[in-house]
Amino acid sequence: MPRGDHWPNWRERLIAGQQEAPSGCHEWQRSRNNKGYGVIYFDGKLHLAHRAAWLAHYSEWPPEGLVVDHICNNPACVRIEHLRLLTNGDNIRRAYPRGDEKTERRRAQNNEAKARYRARLQMKRGGSNTVV
Ligand SMILES: [Zn+2]
Image (cartoon, rainbow, N blue to C red; front, side, top):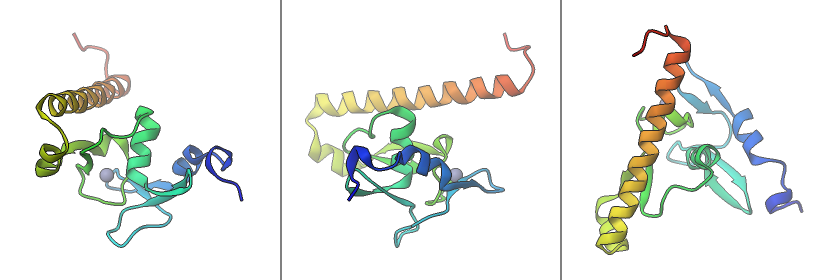
């Protein structure tokens, strides 16, 4: 059985498995779980497709204790611009002492800022160059 690193590149499967919807969402076309979230199998485990999309984009899993939330409320969506990190209130308070929680929050905010920056760059490229 092929497994782990030898499995055909999951990033390629991730890209091949999504399709742009009129809403702008990149909807997962393959397996979904009972909550409507896309799922993809690699490294010997079934992963949520939108979390895999996060990993593919940022090269790291979302910080432990944070959830990847769909801004578009479309659970099948794997478009990185439609995803954000949310603290899972009580969970994070239980999981981290104070300092660590702050660190994780800051990292989440950094990631959000990066995503916003990238989105702005894309807009600039598509639009005029009169931005000061
Ligand atoms: Zn979406």
